[in-house]
Amino acid sequence: MIPALRIASLLLALVALGARAQDLQPIKDAGPYVPSPDSVVSDMLKLAEVGPADFVIDLGSGDGRIVLTAAKVFGARGFGVEIKDELVRKSNEAAKNEGIAGRVKFFKRDLFKTDISQATVLTMYLLPDTVNLLKDKFLAELKPGTRVISHDYPLTGWIPEKYVQMDLEDKVQISGVTTTLIYLYVIPAKVAGRWSAKMPPAVARQASLELRQQLTKVSGSARLDGRDVPLEDVKLRGDRLSFKLAGRKGEFTGQVKGKSIEGSFSGGGPKSAWSATLGS
Ligand SMILES: C[S@@+](CC[C@H](N)C(=O)[O-])C[C@H]1O[C@@H](n2cnc3c(N)ncnc32)[C@H](O)[C@@H]1O
Image (cartoon, rainbow, N blue to C red):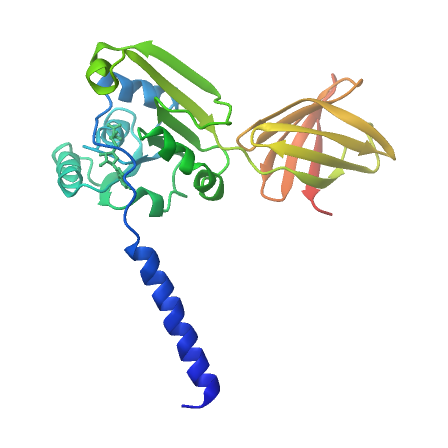
């Protein structure tokens, strides 16, 4: 074999070996099988405002109750992933018996290696260290606006949009206490950076925005015709951004679509359009 070909085949063999090594890694146990009580399942799905347009993914789906209820009661589609064969079989059988097998599926799959990008709602009832190991995966794979619901354990450092706390006798045999918590998070769009902006003429002829972001917390300033003006009341929920200009009337709202923002400005009179493009 000529040297260049030998090197290429050696590289291919190494890549194949790397992929196999990753597949051979032991599956991390993200938590024992403990089903969420039915009332908690219902409260989780209500808190996420699940509806027919939603695609629900449950990580560590147990007997499938969260995804099954999302489909049966709330009209959603989705899938669950679970490592225990018997639970996967039972969940698919229940879906078939309920007549919803066309809308929900259960797979024997490691949750850490599952592509979750299809979710509009992601649910989990997993060990506290596991939910925190998943944070980077959520930010990398989930679309802005995706609702993440965690039963009992919070994502450390993330501010929940809502949470509910209740006491349930059913929980005593699971966790030793009656306290039950459900956290709702909304995946924020990525807005950090310098945006060149087109503002209504009454606001500025030349404009840019400088945004800083830590998850859902956003701050920054606008440069309007050569003058820096701090932003106030900056809010980011999913892909929806809103802010005010310090010392001026009116509010800007907009939708973040990747590297562009399109929105409207209401300053008392008729609304006018504004837009921004990242990095130019
Ligand atoms: C606490 S139970 C929750 C079951 C269900 N989500 C519910 O709330 O009723 C956690 C489930 O995760 C499963 N599990 C643990 N590690 C996993 C992994 N790496 N990949 C997929 N499932 C896993 C367990 O087998 C168990 O059924």
